[in-house]
Each structure stands twice: as C-alpha cells, then as structure tokens.
Amino acid sequence: MPLSPLDIHNKEFGRGFRGYNEDEVNEFLEQVIKDVELLLKDKKELEEKLKSSSERVGHFTTIEMTLQKSIVVAQEAAEELRRNSQKEAKLIVKEAEKNADRIVNESLTKARRIALEIEDLKKQSKVFRNRFKMLIEAQLDLINTDDWDHLMQYEIDTSDLDRLNSKED
Image (cartoon, rainbow, N blue to C red; front, side, top):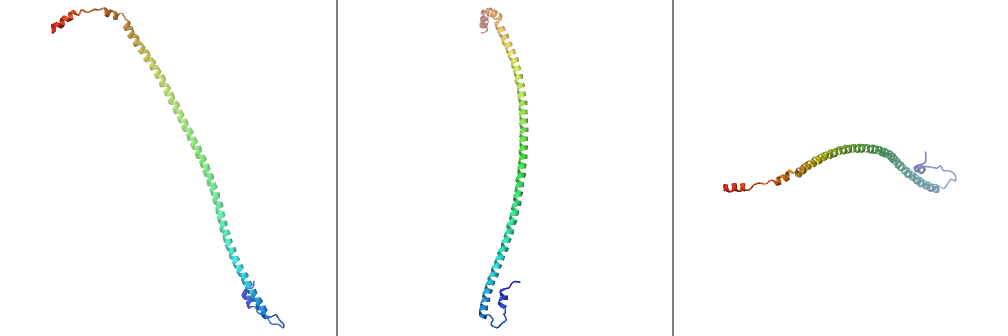
C-alpha cells in the first residue's frame, strides 16, 4: 500500500546518538509531504481525465458503430431502391410496349377499314359516273332526235285562238 502524506506526517523516528538534525528532517518531510500531495492530486486529476477520456472514447465508439450500422442500412436501402426502380422501369417499358402494340394494331385495323371504305366509295363513284353518263347520253339522244325538228315545223293557227279570246271578253 502506497504512503499517503498523512503517513509521512505522522512518521516518528527514534532518537539515536549523534542522529540527524531534527529540523532538517522535519523540513525535508514537509517538502516530501507537499510533493506527495501534489503527485497524488495530479494522479487523481489524470485518473479523472483518463476516466472522462475513456467514457468519451466509449461514446465515440458507440457513435462509430451506430454510424457504421446506419451506413450499412442506407446502402441496403439504396440497393433495394435501385432494384425496385429497375423493376418499375421494366414494368413501365413493358406497359409502354403493350400500349404501342395496341395502338399500332388499332391503327392498322382503322387503316384497313378506311381502305375498304375508299374502295367502296370508288365503286359507288364509278356506278354513279356510269349512270350519270348514261342519263346525259340519253338526254343528248333525246335532243338530237328528229322529233325536235318536226316540232319546229308544226304550225298552229292562232287566228282561231284570237277569235275565241275576243268572244270571251
């Protein structure tokens, strides 16, 4: 067990013949007591600093472990987010391709229907043109007949009409 300043202070030395000078010994002991007190005080302060530093190191170690765990969790979350984003992107592309196929198919169907309608309209216009042509040709034949010339040669006696018209008045 180490000596304390009190142990040094209470130490009694036996007296001997031609011993040490008591005042010098007491003075030296006083100096030793002060030095030991200072050393003990410094030791206590250093122990408290060491304890505080150890606590801080423990605290920082805990923080470091927590940060490492947080980094791992963040990396896992980022990886999961990346995987989910890739899955979602693939689904979006697949849906877009499906919609594009549907739109193309609808457009082709519509184009075929319009082409059929155009062909039908062409047939109807040919029929109409032929009928109209026949009608005009029939009318031209009617105009070109000799009956018109014969009508122009026909004369009406208007004298009878004038007489009848004057009788009625």
